[in-house]
Image (tube, rainbow, N blue to C red):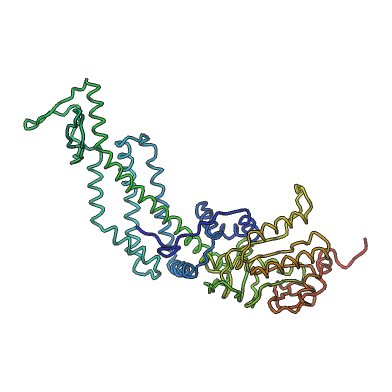
Length: 497
């Protein structure tokens, strides 16, 4: 049975090995908050969701396929939840029979396989009922195709046939034919039949029309020889049934993994809907410089805070870099995380936290966020930042996206600005898009003075009374981040020591 919920037939799931940069990405963008809301305490679902998010799709057709399946899942959430439950129950079948047969002898393998297949019959019946109940309403090629495949490969009469075969395979008598070889040893063994065991073969009495050699129960060597013959006859049957049962189990394992991601998306969508926040299926575009969003918000912040958050509009088509400046605690870092999460979620084939989003696919997203002071650092803070940025540059390639949050703020204004300018210029020249939050006024002023039309400047909004609106709007950098606003909010107007 073929499972194609997350990618179309002929397209494999991304298998890129994860590296330390992916751990930074998950930490900086709050991906664990997102997958936590998707999982709701289900450790398996959480691991699947995190893995899928960290291995983005770049093929537009594959993204479109997954978006179609996701739309179907959001329209029929009960169908997806039930599918995940069935697959989860099925994958537990192996643990329920494990330990019953620990030998590698064919009879033990056969016993284990019979028990496993019997344990899988109930989930298979449940899967057939699922297809009959939900299949007619499903519309996506992935989910509808699965329902049709189930109905085709699991007709009702199939279950009766399987149960009959399993009954025959439970401790069967073995009938074989063979020839004498040149040395008088048996050769050319062929299994001709399996018959339900009537009684112990040691005690079977020969029928009058048979030429039979009866092995007395006291003949240990003869009994061992018969056991070896029986094992030889069972080997091909045991191997075939073991392969079949393991194949069914593997199919359910794949179904569990792929339906887990869809079930997680359904759960997250419901959570955001309860918070009164919009979601949208984004429009992925070929690699380039398209980025337009309305009502874009940080999904991680929303699920972490359990409340609605402010969304922002972003018109960055054709821009190689987006530079965000302005008031402290005005929503700059939140916008940066929202951009990164939207990119990652869009390329996972998910909905995004926005009213709408059109975005070019990127080969990879990298993050360079300011770290809190760490007494364990063996070198200076600036060196630590440069080492991390150097690793990002090494991993970057044309068509990638780098998100920088307050990088190089650990040194003085002039040195930090020079470093930032050189790195940003180099990344842009290398075909890498950049989105950054910075308080380095010399750096942002230098970009402004160059009059570049491929850089979009945004500024955190500030009300006349100094309060933060948490909206980020187009605007050239200002020579202040309004730190006095925060001082007065905490300490009042008294500036005396």
